[in-house]
Length: 362
Image (cartoon, rainbow, N blue to C red):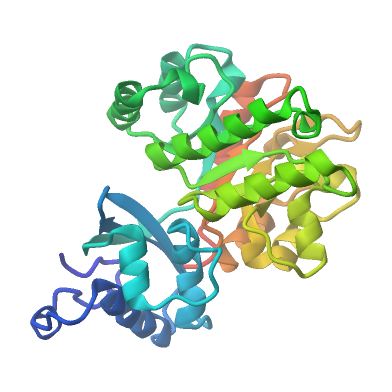
C-alpha cells in the first residue's frame, strides 16, 4: 500500500517503508499511530480518513485527522468504531485483539455528504435504492422498520444480496433509522420488542457497513421501565462498531451531556426540533463537539413547517457544513425529508446546494 495523495501539496507518508515493515514486533496499530502523529505535526489541512483494516471480518474504521488535535484525540473516533468506547484506556495490542486486527490495507480521504432516507419514497427497498442513485446520491439511510428491510426478515443471504445491490449502484449505507414511538421503550407490552428491534438494527448497521444508528429514546427520569431500556440500549451501543445516537432533545444522551456524564449513546441532532425549541443548531455543533454522533438536516419555514434547507431561511448551510468539518464530524448527515411537500425536488436541491459549497477546509 502506498501513501494516499490528498491534494497537490499534501501527501501522507509511505506506510510501507521497508524499515518499518521489517520489524515483526510492531503492530500495525502502532504504525498507524506514528502515521497519525506525523500527519498532525505537519499542521496539514483537516481531513477525515477511511482506514481500511483487514480484521477477522474486513471492516472500515474511520479516524479524524485535524491540526491542533493530539494523537490520542485522533484515536477517539477509531475506538468508537471498534466498539471500544466503554473503556477509557487501551493499549495498542489490546485494540488489535479487540477487533481481530491483522493489518492495515489502505487509507483514503473521507468526503462528508448527506444521505437520502429511501423510506420517504414509499417504494420497495430495491426501487428506493435505484431512485436514490438516479438522483445522484452516494449515500442512503435505510429504515429498519420498513417492510423488506426489517432485520428479522433479512438472513445472511439477504444481507449479502442487499450489500451487492448497494455496490452495484455505487451507494453506501451511511445509517440505519429505527425511530420507534418513544413510549415503546416505556410500556411493558412493547418494551421487549422495542429492545429486540434496537439490537437487531445495530447488528444490521454493522453488517451493512453503516456508521450511525438513529434512535428516539425516552427520558429515563423516575420511570423504571424507561431507565432499564436506556441501560439496555447503552450496553448494546458500548459493544457496537457503529455509533448509536438518540435524536430526542430531552433524551438520555442530551441529559448525559448536560450533566457532564458519559453514555455510549451519542447525541443525534434533529435540526428542525432544535429550531422549534429556539436552539441554535450551529452553536450546538460547537458545544457538542465529538458527542455529536449524527445529524438529521431539515429547516423550518415561517409557519414552522418542515422544509428543505435550500428552501428555508433559518439554517445557513455553509456555516452548518463548516461547523461539522472544522469539528471533525464523521457521523451521518441525513436529509430528513419526512413531511416535505415535494421530497424529490427538495432532496435534489439540498444535495446540489451542499455540493455547490467549497469544502471549508482542505
